[in-house]
Each structure stands twice: as C-alpha cells, then as structure tokens.
Length: 445
Image (cartoon, rainbow, N blue to C red; front, side):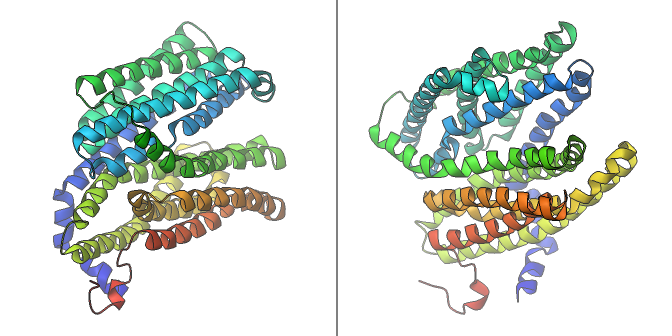
C-alpha cells in the first residue's frame, strides 16, 4: 500500500507541479545562498593555513566554540517562535512580537556579559581566549540574532532573493575583511576574530535599521509576548544545546582516544556530510513557512482532513526523495575524495556511509518536527533531543573504545534513528495528522 502511495506521489504530473511551484524555486534560492555562504570559508581556509600555525587555529576554534554556545543561549529559538505565530496574528501584532523578541535577546545578552566578567579566568584557562575576546562573543551573538530576525521576516514574506542577497553580501564582507586583516596586514588569528566582530556588528545594526524602515518592528512592550517567547524558547534550549554538544564532543573523543590524524579523517568525511545537512536545512527554510501557512488554513477550513492527507503524502514522497538524494551525495563525496584529495585522505571513506545515513535520518526528523513547532508544544522535544545528545556522548565513547574509531560515526546513526522515531511519535501526539490514512477507510470528522 505504501509503495502505491509513493508511486502515485512521484508521478510525472506531480514532478512537473513540483518544479513549477514556489516551494521548489525558494528551495533552490535558499540552497544556492547557503552553498555560497559555506563555500567562501572553505575557499579561504587553504590561504589562512599558510599564515596561521596549528596553535593559532586551536585558539580560533575555541573562540568560535564560545560564539556558537553564546548564540544558542541568547537566541532562545526566537526565529522559530516568530515563524510559529506569523500566520496566526495580524501584521501589527507580529511586528510588536518582534520588538519583544529583541527585548528578550537583549536581556539574555546582558546576563551573559555579567557571567563572562565573573568567570573570565576559568573560561580563559580552558580556551586560551582572553577577557576582551570573550566579551566580543556576546556582542557577536547579539547582532547575529538581530540579523536572524530580519532574515526570518524575508523568509516569511517569501522573498528568497532579498534573503539570499543579504546573506551573500555579509559573507563576502567577512571573507574580504579576513583576507585583508590576516593575509595583508598579518594580524594573525585576531584578524579573523576582528573580521567577525566588526562585520557581524555592522550587519546587525543594518538589520535593525531595515526592520524599522520597513515597519516590521513596533516598539511596544508586552509582558504577554515576553512570556510567550520564553515559554516557547526555554524548553527548546536543551534542544539547541544538544546540537552544540554533538558537534564538539565526537572530535574531542577522537583526539584523546585515537589521535589528531584520525580526527582529521573524520572531519574530512564530516565536511562532505555537512553539505548534505546544508541543503536539507535550506529546503526546510523554504518548506517551513509553506507548511505553516497550509496548517493555519486547515484550522479554519471544513475540508481540513483532505489538506492534511495531501501534506502527509508529500512527506512520504520527500522521505523517498531523501533516499535518492543521500545516495547521490554519498557517491559524489566518495569519488571526490578518491580523485581530488591526497591519497592520505582515502581512509576517511570509512566514515562516509554512517555519516550519510545519519544525514538521512536528520532530514526525516526535519520533516516531522515542524508540526511540533507549529503546535508550540516544545517542552518534550527539548527533552528528547538533549537526552539523545547525552546518550550519543556515552555511546560514542563506548563504541570508540570497543570497536575503534569508526564506532564513533555509527553511534550518530543509532541516535539519529531513534531521535527521528521518537520525535515522529511526539509529533503525531502533539498535532493530529493522518499519518496512517492508508489504513483508515473513512475520514475522521
């Protein structure tokens, strides 16, 4: 029965409709934008490597680890919260909501600045990043989140070219300034951090000006909005932290239980997998507003069941498409490593299959988690993802020490699979969708 559904969904007529749809065009726009944004740092890397020593890269890496952590905490999933209310409220109320999101971000960043001042010696001891640069991480996080709000507005207004052009302009500015400060002026690793600090601050201020000019922000404080933002974001904080934990712990384990060479091989395979993640998230950037708009219409439509059934069919079609997409990505990555990289990198091929399978389950996860965001019931989601990250840390250590370095990649497969299944179950309980419509003869009322 499922095979018939997928065969019908992937018919030639449906494929033509897909290519003609705004969803497809937006996905391409977002995908190209993110591809350019990710490509620029990779182009810059071999140039920087001629100037910076491994020690310099170590400090720089620790700096960006702090930036990532502070950004996650201060963002508090405000962009997700904005998306979830955008189609449910009048424009005037949405613009007021944006202002209160800025208030929340500002308050959190002030608290983080105080914490940095209090614990600066401890942070410097474990990262070698001094107080001045610790403080800049909070400012970078603040202005990054302001820019993210403006970019989200463009996504919701279905303006992918403004969204993409703005991001590419920012990436070009950061890349050019890094080249000048590090390569030309020889400011060492601090040239890269100065580039990030100055560039992101500038674009953050510019984003705030655009929000005001386009009347997308209304300066009216609302305790009810602040409460709503916190109720949405706080339960998702463990979810965001789980992503941060997964990206760093595996590399630390490989470095300490294997060696830096093995970590380099793993990171090489992970780089290719990150391209897959990039494209999946780009699709989700376009699919998310499309789905929320459809769901908001079903709330007031008599034929809601049929609309939901079509969305479920689309999800199953996308599951099938993911299989093909990840397989093609695997073949491309494999032969790129064989033919274009140094022979010493061929050992990284052992990590590709499990990491690509992980990417597949992560893509499936994205397709079902959106219903939880739409229902704004995120508490249990945070618990699932954060628990999953802790399990992966433990499982990674066990498989690494038991089966060797490749065990650490297979731990990500196991956790990604169960994470997808548990979130799908939670999604079904949180927002009613006819996932088993092919077993139900009569539509539910």
